[in-house]
Image 1 (cartoon, helix red, strand yellow):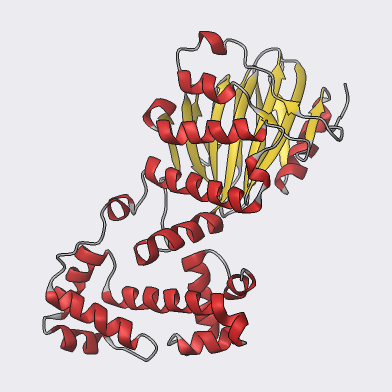
Image 2 (cartoon, helix red, strand yellow):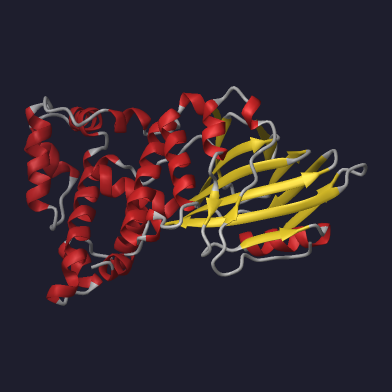
Length: 362
């Protein structure tokens, strides 16, 4: 069979997983059902075991190794890819007569991966930590900057969704504002049943089916961005992370007077230098009471609320900067930053992109 790519005008359809009809998990069957990729997505196919490692190295932009058990025989690999915004959907079939295969890659340090196996189980190993994912389950794995081994037992068929961390953080910042702390972190490795996250599973299935249609909706850039944002928000709602409790609770309208007073003070004076002593004097309560008041009702301490307010104002200004011919430096100084480099670091941490990138999105 050798190496092949999809020809112009072809649609590459994934083969239905063996035994799916007998699988009682409806979520798996619905995901596999009409999974296909359009002609714009390249397809790779090979029966040469020597071609597998170079393929994964090219796919991931990182060193890769591939091996099978001594008593195993490699039968073939098939891959297809689709893009939804900056998020990639990769479909894999790895067939082996017995034993298991190992793919070792060094992932980028700023991505999250969703593993959805349709056939066969996969073991993901990072350092001394490992998880196993089987059909009917979904796993969220953060890239750890170290080698990640993916061990497939026998024949494997799975979907891997790769979401850049910057894209995720930008979506959260736009949606939740100051509540989306820039250090949101999922647990490093999470495995759960698809039945426990049905909305996420159905949405993934919908995207898979759309990719296989003749006139796919995600070909439209605006629709793709909207679908990507929805996927990210469902991901945040479906898997535990350090801000789960905060994002689940809207800001309380019953915040005490001193919190509301300092909020108004910050909003009116964010562009100038504000000290913690000024905030305490404005609140009329102790520094400790003010700190815990902000933490309880706004989810962040007063100084961090000030930083988020400045950055939110700067983001709005950057989106209009081209029309009024303002530079990043001018926006940073107007937002209350004395250091432009510090502004750029904080901005990227908060929104997942540089200030200049925001300006270009007009």
